[in-house]
Image (cartoon, rainbow, N blue to C red; front, side, top):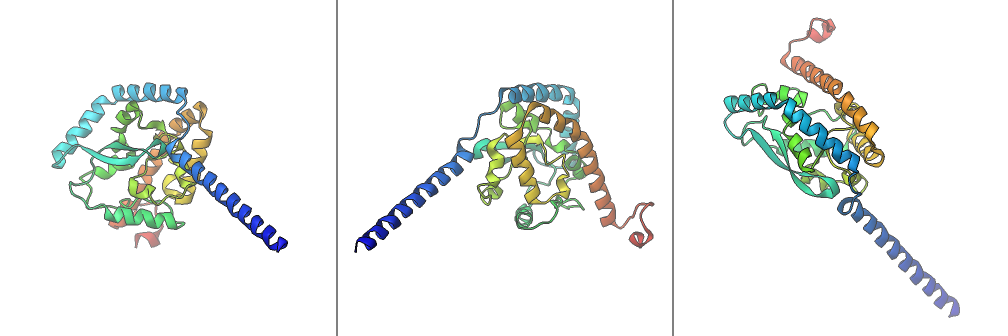
Length: 261
């Protein structure tokens, strides 16, 4: 009987210890999104300086893009969408509208869910052409010019010049606790993932790069990523251009004969 009572007490203590451990784990997970670390002062200062300077320099280009969208497509110039930011909080993300008004986005959500579960490269769904996109809208998307309005998000403090790309709520809901750690820093216009292959990486690789950045961000790394961004955008534009050529059936002169057939 004494052995039975001792065994019962041991089992009770074990269950209590497990419950406390689970509670601590849950609280830690909660802190990763609801109470993330504060944004360093150097990062906020860098964001305000760079975003305000770029807005002033590119003001004519921004005005021309807005005018072009208004001329070729009926509807608003800006596309506003709820995104997940620092600490898992919602904010309104701004972009130039590159899709026709009322375009269905259900296909994109299904495509992204498939990427989350697979080891496929994160190629954009519209890389080879998309009838939902306005004339020449693919160029704005491939060059990142459609994201210029997010400079205002940076000024407001919702985003940073450098950080993980902000997720939409439906994507965030399917994230694991580890994947949500990418929200421990401000989302950014560019980031470690964007200059490390982007469309050639898998979803898991993107998450690993985002988490790595959130844990090791510093002034030198931010500057390094911003310097690499133009080259990364040029590479992305080239990939999109080649994909569109192959889809249209017009092979470049320097491609092998079997690809031209």
